[in-house]
Image (tube, rainbow, N blue to C red):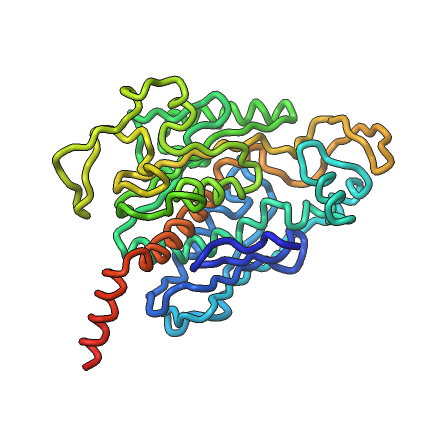
Length: 375
């Protein structure tokens, strides 16, 4: 099975299934000499793990991370970093009746057509549980980004028809509210809406916004490896994401150029990059970062596993009335916030490493410095 590796110089490879013994990730290309705090990796995983609130699945996984290699005395060695997360609360029997039918909104049918089999126990590699491995990798990358002065964070912008109000934005609430909304009033309204959906045996979708501050200008390449293309690819690879926007996204299709262009100002930011009057572009122009805040918005579909009766067919094409048992999130979005954040952190760090080889003068400067230092 291809497609479990992501990245260019910094590569992550995830493995494991939803109802297997464990999930994990191997990170290759992570620089040596970075001081790592394992507790911060665990904090990231705790934000994603199930059973934390009334709007998440009741599956009770500790999601304790085990670092197997690549870190010695709290410092990265430059060798592959392997991390393992054991599954301890699988209820595979809940999925037994799904063996011979296709769940609406899931990958069951396509997976079986492609590989000739499928893991009916929660979807196997197609399960959202796979993202635990991505979060472990993202937590590691975010620690280096912080050391470089780059701040990458995400939050729930909407759930169903409920939108967080930018005027009430409070970043500290992201990890405190059950919805991961930075707006306490919107959180309360969203919780009531989710409760209503649950009573009707239904689910709901929403949006996640990820912001990256203090990213230097010059990251990304102008053709196939545009920074916005790489970020979109990274976020779109998260299960249940159906659309990704950069900056103002789809709104720009209704504007004139004079309304959408971001005017440059005769002043620079703390990194020496030219400031802009507006940021409709979301910090990326021509596929290359421009030094402004990077803005990514991901749209998540409603959880496809709902308790209400649904129409489907079995493997013989015969109609089946299906009620999905098991433990499922009424809304995916709150737990997906840290997943989007992780994928963006991995992508931005990879772009930073790639950018080091873009100019000969910087390569020359680096090796001249190291040669003089070694004398």
